Image 1 (cartoon, rainbow, N blue to C red):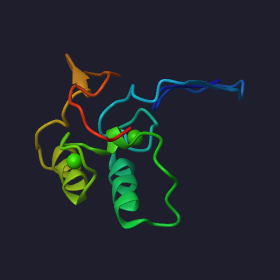
Image 2: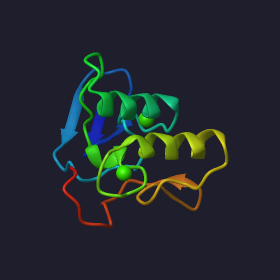
Image 3: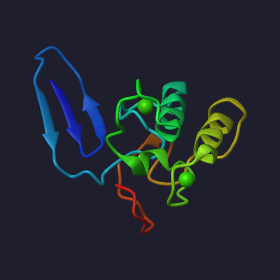
Length: 114
Ligand SMILES: [Ca+2]
Ligand SMILES: [Ca+2]
């Protein structure tokens, strides 16, 4: 079974069903491709969205792409995530991690992204 809570893929298994809970504002910041993992694929998703790559699927949650919580999705969000993943840079802004574990949450700041 595959379960999406808002923008977050929580589980995948063997039943092949998909459950979507319609709360699009719950997310993990920087999980741009909504697979509940934070890695280079999320950087690729952000760059694909910014450049309008036709092979890039539409992101489920634009807030997740806004890594620096600046209210816009721009190249700096991809660079921020690269710095975090590979150069020891700061963590993405909340909702991201709490006590070392990824957390699903709401955007603490008001912006036009969903
Ligand atoms: Ca991801
Ligand atoms: Ca941003």
